[in-house]
Image (tube, rainbow, N blue to C red):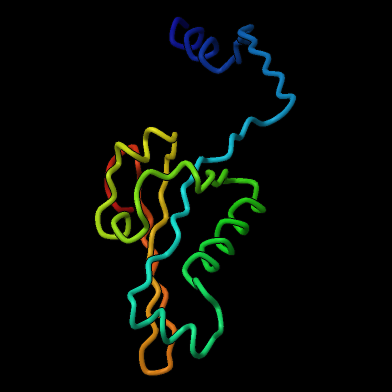
Length: 135
């Protein structure tokens, strides 16, 4: 009899009165501050660009395209290039993360452009400024 009563109590659902109300009105997504450094170019490649493409500084032009695409996605906030403390050629090799931290960048995009055998080669590197390493 006791066993039946215990079994009956286990099988009867017990209501829980704990209530949590969550009211979501909108999402909160702040764009990531990113620094897009102008791409570095060696002298030989730069002469090849001027001769074949008729663009003075192709590295800057490519970085502008990348910057505009990131801005238009709404997920990134490209920082003003006038605030950059480090030159593009040095930043491409090994960025000084302290400098990029000062301007509040959380990510850094560097790279280089080369022109060999009538072919354009573009390399990008993405750096995590807060962790101080390449992603």
